[in-house]
Image (cartoon, rainbow, N blue to C red):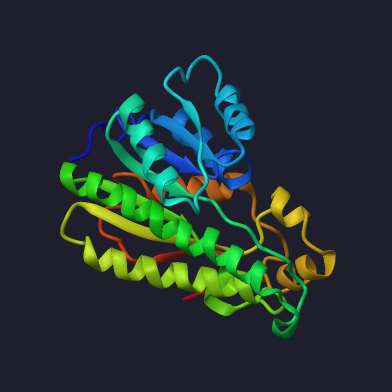
Length: 257
């Protein structure tokens, strides 16, 4: 059993690392994890944004810290994970929200190779580096929860977003493999596949691309940060103990498999 009880403070005594914690789904998840008792480390390339997320938690979260980290840099990932563990204790939870869309609203023949590579380095290779850094630690303590934020694009593909779709499909495949690899260790590895969640990243996309995605949601609306954070917190809680290698839907009915 993990440190901490399954209760209103279900993450009490646990250290949760949130990557991409400077804004959006990462900030919302860090906030909810902290409110439910976790010691939270917000990691992001944008250190000022990560610190703002920590500051917003207020005086009731004295154990929260912000750390700067580039998810594409293997040594930086290992160092930041080690620093979070040194300062807050053994890591029980990893929530990886780091990701970029790259340039969108372009057909494959018009996509720059450099942009394709950058999207894959952050969205897929970065997720692999994070898993590789935390999984041995979790296995050694007999408990852990790893959650990578994928995308509905990884299941269905979004036209005009070939790099993003490919990287998120790869991420889903990685989660399936890791879930099986660590199934007997007390560690679960899962993914979340949102459709459109209203974030700064979405706001920066061309309106035609956002409309393309939103028009395919049967609920005819975007998801909220609260809905995303609540789903994430359940997946990484002690309650979610018999599901691993799975990609949870958060798509307003767009994906039902």
